[in-house]
Image (cartoon, rainbow, N blue to C red):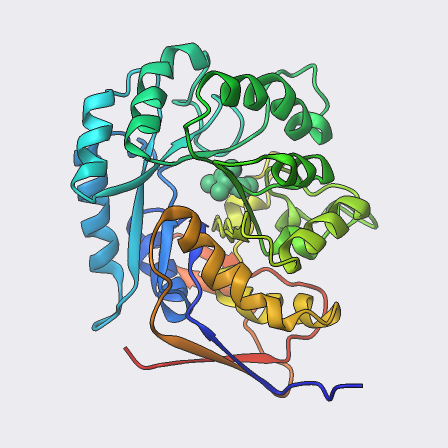
Length: 352
Ligand SMILES: NC(=O)N[C@@H](CC(=O)O)C(=O)O
Ligand SMILES: [Zn+2]
Ligand SMILES: [Zn+2]
């Protein structure tokens, strides 16, 4: 049997789905991602949302201002698709290099999605324009029909929305964000082109028992909600497979503890600081550490048509990490994702 490796050097990973928020929260969480990641696709679900090219330019400046001195972290901006989005504005923002992608939230599907899309036909001119110019669409893939069980909303979205959309606009490049089901994994695997999926840190680690068994645990509540164990196993299999259509999007989504610990608490799990250590444990457990670089550092840039990062990070096995339970922010404490097992992999990065 091969001895277990104690170090692993990879091209610096990127995060293809990240919430940085704004104001005091942005100031606290941006350095956490910038420590480990080269780039991140920045989610636009602020209040009010980042809709236009001008909104994205201003938000990008606020993100850059929140980074530590000398940081090389690059925020890749997305535009929040509304029924009033202007195809010309979207195309201009893409052509100038300001916006990397557009984000589709079905109205009401998740945190700050009220300005999202109710009728997908209304945004067809934008989507057709994006297909022409090769601009990817990132999708929160859940239906919002209250008659559909929350555990089925992703699978129903694939049938009712995604399949018809991909038939109508086959040239549109789509990322199904934060997939949580075997159904979604199979759908992506069966597609021939223009479709990929991000997988989060937490969906590789928890199933729905983490939220509900033995007491209700709001810090494990996110959307799409974690599913049963067989689905988690399908996600792990996809992530470690090396298949280029699956890559890391942490969906690190900080909310203050007071906002989470409520009779109706916010959805979102804050994983950015522990993601690389968690992933190393997950990949190692199935003896696929050699596939971590593809998942975290190579497949994402390839789908987005960008070069992988030149910098390297080294993961080194050591004593279990001692992590704070929460980070302090100007909006109150934000609890860190606890994977429920010790994290032995320490992250060493090249100095900026
Ligand atoms: N994933 C979540 O549970 N929450 C995200 C929104 C999202 O990505 O759907 C958030 O912005 O808090
Ligand atoms: Zn989402
Ligand atoms: Zn998200």
